[in-house]
Length: 124
Image (cartoon, rainbow, N blue to C red; front, top):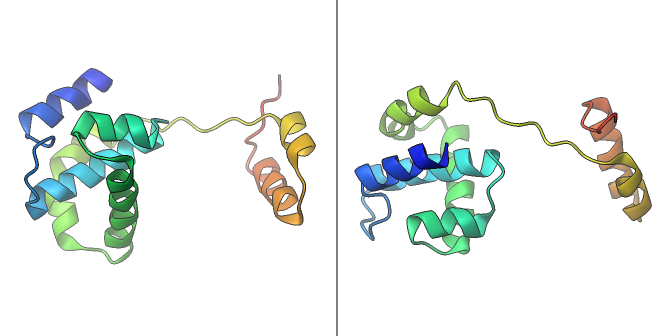
């Protein structure tokens, strides 16, 4: 998977300093995909010769563009969607015992409740 992403980054020159809107849209799509695959902000940034703050900004920007049904983001990332759209995103698995021990607020307990409802705890 990472080899394919590296090939695309190199092929489309996404690690260049060029800030053209089409390239930015492609970058932020890949930031989002890589993040969903479990990569850290720092590792994603390294692949694109960017800072982790740039990646975080790109992730937020992508969310905003998708929420607003931006036509250009869809057009610019159509090829990537065909390549990566069918790849399953791994569902995170949490440890219930660890979460309960670390819970110190009502908010923490609410998170545990939502994770239980979504079957996100390891049953082994």
